[in-house]
Image (cartoon, rainbow, N blue to C red; front, top):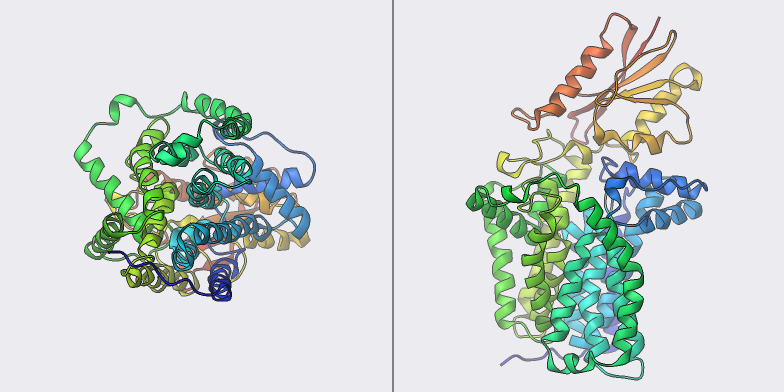
Length: 531
């Protein structure tokens, strides 16, 4: 028979929550401006926030309108308060993850007790996915994780624990679900999970007929509807054919299962961000242990957390591939697809926390320690001292350690270092900065206050004007691993190298070489002039 954990005094819970929050803060704020490196789609959000902070907002691109620009406005406010910097923008997901962590712990304590609440908060504090995705603004998914973890608890509080404030709790639950749609269409999965959670319980099902439920639903629908319409329009232009989704089904399911198990163990996130990967047998073993822990919690965890998590887990496993299919490869073959894992992590954390209310509480505590001292620690050490080549983006080709996340020993983002070097040439006069990789897209934000000309050779040719000073940004030899795929990225870097050595330019010289923390080469900055 399950044995409930003894209820500690309030001050012990408060002290425990303060300690967990301090750990979460420490993992998120150290070198926030540079770790991980600002890259790729982060440039779009940074520039959108900068434009709004300076009073001239530009609509999001048509292919990005499956979300609203609320995230950009939140970062714009941070920039108005703290200055135009990458760290200011990244403070938004950091703050949101910390607020979400505390809110989840307080609600879970009311529902399941102090120890399960602290375990739940600790899992959200130290899991590699929660840490690394709250340290960048490539996507707002750190906010999505907080909302996905909060939604089932709010729903239980609103419909299963009646009080005079129940109508307000129901409105809060509706707004929590609706807010998720502002950041990702995958918010439909937590919404379906809440619906299944309420309908499967006789107590909450009976209370769904009350007027406050309708009010909460209408208030939520008011700002969900435009997002759903926008997402549907974007999905109409999806690049994948429905008929192709079942091709090679067996191998696709293997990749899908490996990715989800890696999300649970944290190894998939490390593979995306670093080269601190485990050998494949150990990675699979870690994933199997993580899945086994979930199975154990399903069998031995204590209600109500276990009962709350089950419909959300089912919704994630079924809904994730179905929602990805119109726009993405549903089996998540690229290493960066682990970012969609927030829909799975939220119910998984609830399940593990449910063990803390039983005699198996030591297993839940061991899981927290294993994450903190295992993948999270390895990832932190890699960013501080590591390096290595970019092994590509595809899981079945042993992809790992994307160059977009790679850092230098300086607490300065790579694009800021590039613009600083450009500004130091010719006494600060404008120069033409030449790149050939979308990874460096945040350079537009870094350059917003400097006025240099940016040319992306992968998008347009370089047509220098007489007397132009150019700064070429070239990936160093060895950054691309042998057998790197897709080859187009390697060829673009080679084309940039050939262009900077073209006879129509003179005075080619190396300005600076940026290196990874372990000393391995990363980026070379070369300058030349048009005669």
